[in-house]
Image (cartoon, rainbow, N blue to C red; front, top):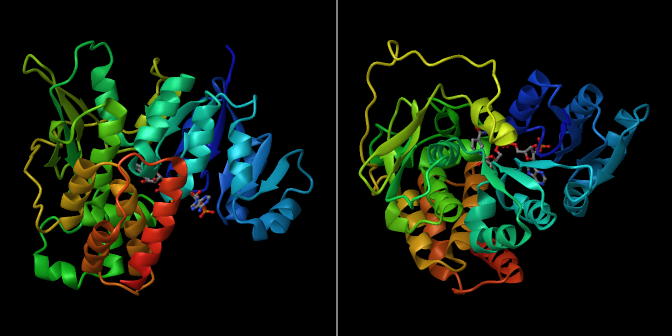
Length: 381
Ligand code: NDP
């Protein structure tokens, strides 16, 4: 069997390390071609020594010397800079690109992978939030398949295998995060530690804060719109604190299909790599007897203002979701550094959306300019 050669953008992160765990379980199927990190060269070098990729890239160029020294006795090419991220994913040796960077930093390398007709296993939802139309159009033109890694979208994708009719609607499930039962007043004083304490998933800091504010779910609504070609009203969010049902599809005859399992990201990562096959995977199995109650409720859009703003941006279209993403990235960073309160996140996103110069049909350059401009607005608001 010919092995699939895999590039992981963001191998040192939560998704990246879990992807390596999946790859390590099937050395007969997968081979690591490229690994990348932002700054964590110690872990990147450790991963490189173990998985022996052809190349590694550190996005922060100031870390090049350190990484080069750590890998001095290894037959591994070492590159630095964000341009190198785009170049390595396009190399002929790469079959699949796992896009697991965080934030808009994922847009350019993911777009490059799509342009080069690579199969993309997409975790970096911000790519579709910022420029979903451009990325999906490019994928259609090049024929590059985009397979979702986000557990909800993987669930929908799995439910749709074998279906040929358009879907009526989808239900995206949400755990509700650490503040599901908190009052609006409590949110004002929510600390970094409280917001980082996610009840179900262990993830990187940015997506954990996005989950606490439910901006993550808003982004997933936008991501679903592009991945499955849906209208905003066809995507409904349901709070499901047990995180057992990963999402559901309602078909035109009223049937509903769901995908269930333990909340373990290695399942959707493995599926994105092996699709259309399924391979045995060493993760714990779901016990229905231990999870007898599966509950569902509508989200509180007033408390979780970020979710409402994401829907609003999606309905507006154009560069509005890009503006929301930019303001959110700034706000989350300020919150994590103790320079903004938790409720400032929604406030800054709202300001970013209101002050955005709306462009109905943005080009790539327009998206990048929108990101830059709205970041400045949010930093000063
Ligand atoms: P992490 O923060 O854990 O990891 C991010 C990775 O990207 C790290 O390898 C990091 O390198 C690298 N990185 C960060 N910033 C840059 C940059 N500017 N340029 C280049 N590389 C960069 O994030 P997660 O793994 O949690 O999330 C990754 C993506 O997957 C996000 O879009 C998230 O929304 C999505 N996702 C995550 C899930 C999860 O369970 N974690 C679930 C579903 C989706 P370094 O380590 O050096 O900083």
